[in-house]
Image 1: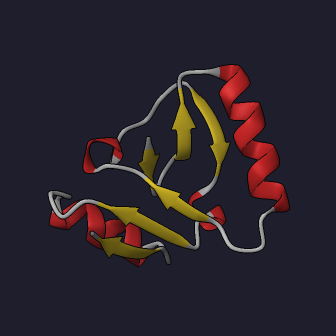
Image 2 (image 1 turned 90 degrees about the vertical axis):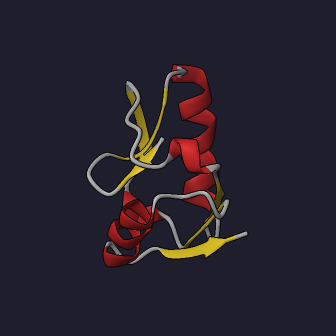
Length: 79
């Protein structure tokens, strides 16, 4: 999931460890997530919202959720 409050989250501890390593090494961090992941919080946090440079999501995304992410400094691309 992705939210301004909890950042990037998942249900899998091993997956989170891999994603943390990827975030640490990336020059630019682009997250691809369908709209069902917006405003969702799962048990394991692997990054903060400040770790996201660009979020690409589908055009079904809730406009309020998109606005909150943009307010948090994330460039949101609707595709």
